[in-house]
Image 1 (cartoon, one colour):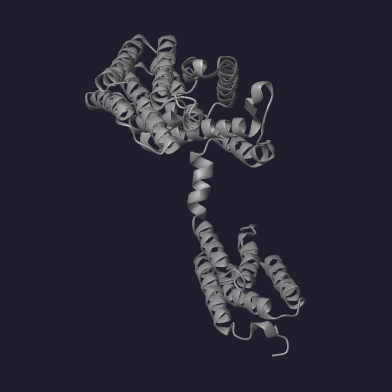
Image 2 (tube, one colour):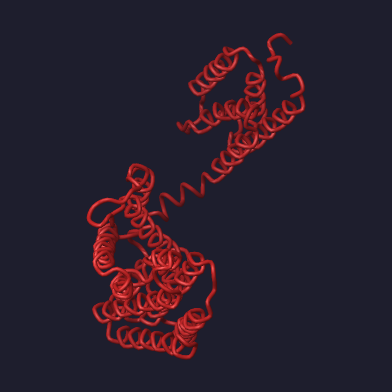
Length: 424
């Protein structure tokens, strides 16, 4: 007992729990490996008992206070793993089982001080091992080369560029923040990827509508452009493209109202009802197109292939938003509170809800009234809808242009009718 840390005196119960966790880790991972070890002389030497013993060995070594015990035990296990690999007679040259054995030992040691973390990692490892066939089939048969390339780019931006981008404002009028720009790029390509995944998983019938709705939380204008391009490429699916475009308007209104409520901590009926009317129109119109769509409006499966996102378009769109934000900041700097409406209208051409937080801040400071703030928000949405009209007229076939432009005009009219009815 001299080898045990004397501070552990009353921690026996915790040690017992840690040993139970290590036992569970070894049994769980070992059970999965037992099913895939094979039979006969070519079977793998590591099974459920080997993994359980390795996890327990790690836990016991972690309990002993001598600092050399744990490295020595890890070295012994590593040597045994190397011997087993060199003597293996199977046809599989992989190292998955051997690496899992070492990791199981280390998880057993980790369970002494971080039993919940060790348990979570053990469950994750067993799930990863059990999903081997599905992962191989997904990577080789479902995931295209372009999609794999897009995944690498996405995580490179997320894990390498975002952490080092400085989170401070600089440049003209202190309007540029590289961290926020990187975050915006990640959101644009992330939502585009989600829409692409939905189209692959649900097919174009459900994927276009759901993809348009989710992508609308990032940029409804971009969705209108993408759906217009889809209608040109697949005229038989124009109604589905129109559904996706209108569902993006629905998500824009939802996000705009949520941001407004969160920023101001109040729910004002004067703006609630106009937005609610717009939500109803944005829901009814795509439902009608979906309800009366033709059964033949389904593109071929080949049309669903391709990249998860367009990096060049995403970066270009981010640059446009950044430039418009710079212009809006300059106008507010020069014109003060008198330029709030003009600033909101100009900002709305790129993003309907980009400046809601700044408007709420001005309202809290008492520089603009609640009614002036709400009017500025609706002006931003109206100018954003105008930009969608321009985009719809630029992209898409004739039917797409007529229906999308008409629907957007109806939505704008209903919203401002609500403004007039509820006493702005």
